[in-house]
Length: 524
Ligand code: AHR
Image (cartoon, rainbow, N blue to C red; front, side):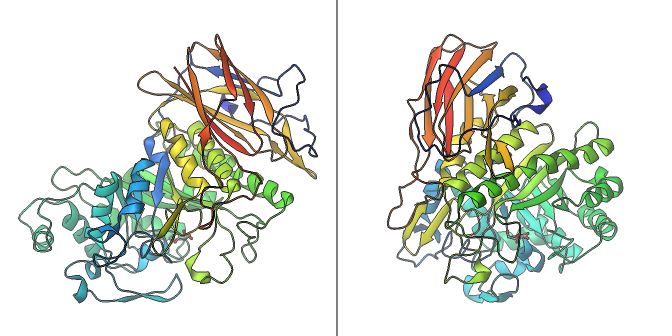
């Protein structure tokens, strides 16, 4: 069955693959289980690199311990920021980093986080565990982190409990080169030249922790606050309005109709809750196949969400000037047993890696509207890339997907059609295979594939229209079990390896796609 190009990547067929099998050698039936037609001759828009963005909040052990250990720490650091973490983050090529929240942003007063650290006032982090925050990681430290890892800063301002003047001053402090009060205060605090701050968020979740506002009220506040977010000294700010909670389409309608012309981006938050129940979300590592399946099925809802919010944005902004900024996404499980419930510390398994791959494929498909996405969160919180335990650090399966998929950043999206069997558990089915392709500036084609089925390896045949390749190479991320994860005792249980399961014949690729796997192929 051929699907229209608009429905590339994530299609359903009613063929059911036998669930009982558990083998990574595809059955030799002589024919393919999955067929992909890659339209290299019909390139669409660019995949914005910022789709691979991150989010680091003052929450639990994300900033403190995960990033900031202080200059006097025995953990090797550069100006207080731990070196092992920055090295790992550089490796994965983070384009943009959102900070300081999240909910924290709407109770954060930036002036408490500048100047000599021993003089900075403390505050209670009311949202996240009620812990006392010493403000040692503030504006200078965050922007230093961005410089160390090569990411562009995305700063989220305080609308919920902050003033317009405070927001205006912060932007001047960071970005102005004038002989002006805020720029001179920055100089007095040790930074002569302004930073470039290309992205600024005007509040966070203003429908909830950011002030429990109605969309009409927030739209007016957005209009007011954003007016005073100024461009100084050649810094051009992409202003991002706080967007909807999941499927609150009315929020998008009201924001776009009342304030759309004053924004460059509108955010959207969607978390994957394995059970669908916020009270008992489910464990990050102890789950059965039914929950595994349900989790993937819930994450695929992202496609519907982006489609429906895009339809509303299209009505108000047919030229797609306003970007959709999915600045919080990822899986949210119960915390690890014995840890502070307010710290949102969870493990990360191959299920998380598959979730990341599926979401990226959705974001690519909507690359004409989705201009940024920021996974929640970079370190030690929710679907993290990195977990730390004092001086120890490990890379999660999600880290590996970000690193493997970084070849897609900035590439030209190449549409594809896919015929895939379903992966079915009980009466619920999802496509077994999802795929996406881009061409980079050097002409290399990158094809990523996700096999959601934990029991069945699949034989994939991909035909390329308008491209031929002489060489193919690839990497695969898979695991012994669908809940395998990396622990501090066994940190390399899930890690990418070279993939030798793909071969080329003219413009045709034959792929033996292992079960519960993410594969990225490069074709030259
Ligand atoms: O990422 C954790 C929290 O989830 C953020 O602070 C908030 O914006 C969202 O509700």
